[in-house]
Image (tube, rainbow, N blue to C red):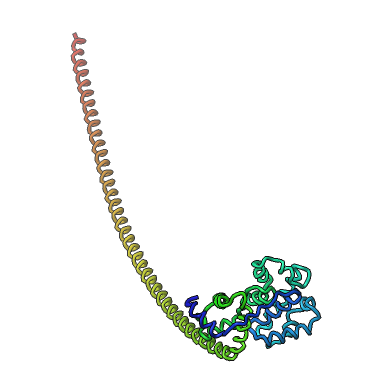
Length: 340
């Protein structure tokens, strides 16, 4: 704990002198069960109330077995609804007694007395007891060095500025334990319970004021959180709107680009089609021209052929006529020879 030296002095001063009376270890372990029940009842309460509740339990139940098998609700009704943490303590008493019986088949703590000293606190915690109850059993039933510290004592010391604000129960226990030796730890316990009883009214007021301050701070924190959440939501909505506008603009640009691309493609296609048509027409015209030229050539060839044929025919005719003429001449020449 921070500034532990200063807090030790303050705590020692406020608790006063401790008696050197140290209790003897319980000879009868049935008495240790009584101490166990008293320890559970005394936590965050005062000695008078705890003893009264213990007396009522002892009168109501025949023995510890009868108490063990009783429902926690009955124990709660027995110690009274107004008792501090009545329901929690009723359940703790019932559960711990059942756990002891489950482990030993009897209602006694003598088996714990046989354990090594350092194992006893750990085992008592395993039974389901709080640190306060464990310390009180170690102190009163086994006469070991321990100082029971509950939340009431820790809050009283914080209220009087004897411990650092916000200190845990373990830190306060460590501080209080460091003030007492083995010889005066029981005296320290008695002084602590007396101090808690004396400070009860002031503690109730302090807790009320502290709770009011906690509620105020929580309200401020909640308002701040709500404001931050609103700002966050606003920023989120703004970012969302911005993102939406950006997406819209992007989509518009994309559409425009797509439209331009489509237009360009259309134009290109038109141009290509026009070019293809022109090419086709040119090709057609060229083909037509070629065909015409070929036809002309063929016609010319035919005419030439015809002319050649005509010439050949004419030549043939001329040859035939010449032949005929020659033959005629020969015939004419022969005829006079016949006359002689």
